[in-house]
Image (cartoon, rainbow, N blue to C red; front, side):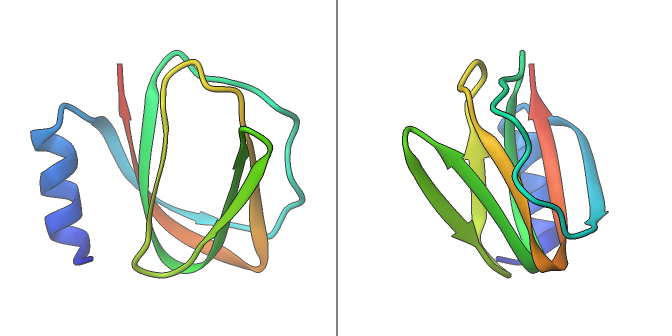
Length: 89
């Protein structure tokens, strides 16, 4: 997915705090939740989301989402990741 189209779709869907992040490799963090929903597009590398007893690895061009209040863990692949993310309150 094109990053400009993705940002426009986030805005249209009510997401704010849209930013591009360069993430260093890291093991999964502890399970947690947020008081907002998150949607992101992986531009490079691998971003892993674990919830509901399953782990999904997202690569370039793939979109991930975690709904508000859903307990999850996040991990960044061995080569790091670059992602565009937005929050919806």
